[in-house]
Length: 491
Image 1 (tube, one colour):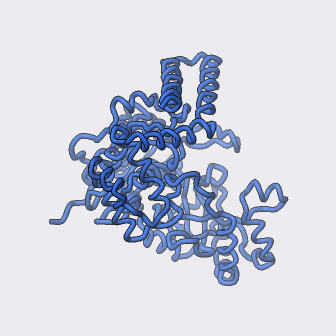
Image 2 (cartoon, one colour):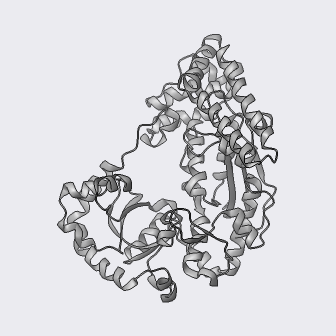
Image 3 (cartoon, one colour):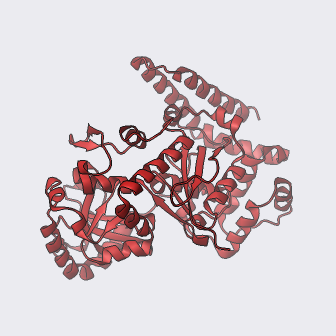
């Protein structure tokens, strides 16, 4: 029987902004029909903290969620991960949210990875896919400005001094009269995103359907192949009015990546540059500035992350183009030159781009997801691990029956057991786990830095006279750090 496609609107609140190291605090998701009718109640889950991680103080102050609350309401992370995995992998699910591809989906991947679940299945297997409303909202401003279906709040940008629209979900919902009971609560954010999406789909049905139909990598590449393309992204910032006219300059390191040239600049300049000069001008912006050179206008995009790319420049009206300083005629001329240039420089650019943008070594196996794909054998064994109850898994490990070829999985396995089922550890296993926690939190200086962050936050709150219950939260964080220290030191 064919399962009808559904949206699954979801959001995380986390204990930090580094998904490989920091942990989720709260997850919420609600399933709906493709017409935005909710199917049942929302899922609201909490991730019980382990002894080898600390929260970001700033994140706790923003969300109001403490480790103690997650400990009280939460489940062990293996169960937390498995429940989310099941929701996102229901056949024909489109997992979607606000900035989910930019942030939350990385939380998914690292969460699944360290809990031995397939980190990528939910974006392609069994008819599943992902999407993100955030770039579409930005596109509405770029294409429509103040004449579209959304009302904008404007502020002065601290860096550029330009007035810019605010794209924060809580500001958008308030400005447009869309229900949003509590910002930075995962359940409220998921419902608010669904309501915002319904508003856009109702008031801008053609744009909504066009963007939805072009969320997969083949459709994105087809738009790029049409010629000069409009790329809209929050990453481009107000200095570029969140958009650029681009053309493909070369392939990226994987089949999911391409390198784009900003057609504001003449690509013919590449023919005058040596291999070494290209290398130097593909470094980071700060490195180029230090060397006294201008960085080449080349950017990598991931085709499978649903970027907003349109190969029909006519969608950007002449009035909006002029207002934002975009010269479409120059872009078209530069695209023709790009076609003459790129075959001669594509290999050099790809080689130097990869050399300048290599991944930094991961600090732990839990953070090393992107180092390599698993072999089929290891993937099957990992799936077996993820689906075992604690007693059977401990028995198999102690009997030497769980042996991975991949060193990352071998390193993670004892920590996976200790984080989720410490009550099953032998005296020797507990001692090894406590030593790992000491190395990770105390010997590394992380616990000291955590306490320093709390001190700084408390001083700022005092100077600003901003209490609003945050003194109690600060006290909870002090208590959590002290408790972890005592558990680790005296184990």
